[in-house]
Image (cartoon, rainbow, N blue to C red; front, side, top):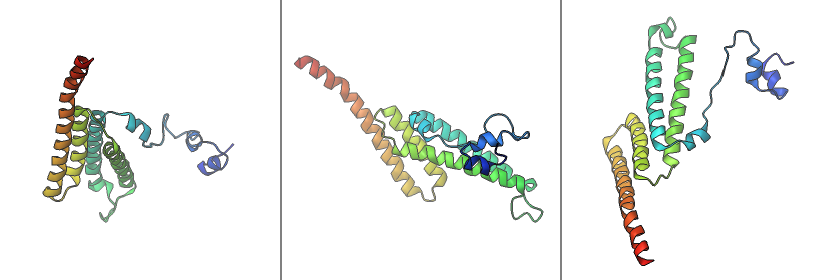
Length: 167
């Protein structure tokens, strides 16, 4: 029976299974990963809402990590607890980036989904932007995309009606 994660990995057992045998390990999951397949299944509004929450939580954790109690005595680096908060912040930021990447790759056609996609990407871009002009160009492109989707939706019933008359 393996006693360490390394032994578990070399014997083909899940590392989490070995770690859960430690009496100090909490119940439930002891590690987190980004489930890209689940992100790809989400609608654009869900992605936008999730991104907003992760951003807010990361900001809160980051704010806590800046407190003196999470720094070394010299105050120029994190102490052990501060390092844990930094890891959590990094994970939240990575998850947020994954959401944005999925949104960028998505090609929604419904105008509502096109709009939510734009908000997801623009809110991320706004947090990272240094210049207004490139951001304004992106915003204009998303407005155009949404307007085109609305226009396609508005024409659909007319096209269907014309086909019915022709039959």
